Image (tube, rainbow, N blue to C red; front, side, top):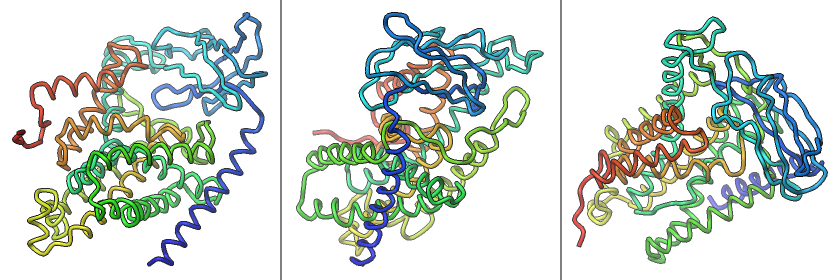
Length: 427
């Protein structure tokens, strides 16, 4: 077993070296600004972007490509003004936050991403003559996107909830498992040349192995040393920072894309258009979530997991190997987080901070559904996903996470244990 672990570790190190060397050469040009223009999950091409210095002097201008991407190099680190020419937007597409100008600071050796949220102009409840959706269409589009994001959050939240239920650990490094899955899939897709779905399967297997290795050689050792839960939680924060900046060192700061499924024409479903890749990811997520949830209820391992979650001491007295069950949970949690990362990478690209950025929503979903309850994590994820997207009907897109957290606060005020959580005595 030790030889197998050493082989896996050496393999991952070599893959990270390949990734690091490849990305270093790609980002050696210096400082710059970049972005991707997306409307309803589809790229927007031909939009003019201008970059100026603080003195108002134009540095360069460009147009978004067929994949919606644009980039402009800048002479040095500093603050720059980025202008989107709204007159070049396609008919029926508008800037949702009415902020066509951004002042962004570019740091030395980095490429800063500018975000311009685009959407369809509201024209009523039916599609307009140009094909853009009306008010009802936009609501339905946001609802579908919320469910889609909710399913990706649910994959990560289910693993996090199982780990908390069996160990009592609030694992702040769980977001890095999401990033790990996305990056492993990127390595096998872009550098090795495998199809995305094959790279994704390998990434999920490696994610499960990474979870097993973490518990076997790190968290399991801390349990044997009887480290307290508060200490382990603080250690998880340190582990998260370490893994995040290791990813930054090898992967650099820019957002990367898989070699496939970057831009797909949507399927017309009436009032909304949906990319086929999103429907496939939804189906995979639902099958995996239903399968894991059913196994928790119907299999002996699932019953043992629930027994350890309810009372570890009594489960051990009943003959259940608690450490083996916790290790199994870490393996499943790592695989689910890796699958979530792969899907998130297909949906919005790969970045070293992607797991950290979604971690707050994952924690909100677990808390909202009820700490330690698998089905609560699923329900909470869907509520968080819908609240995040639908809140943009009333608030700017940049504040959409505020809508989800507001729902969390309101529910917790009236039901502190979460939607499906159990009441506990305190004191």
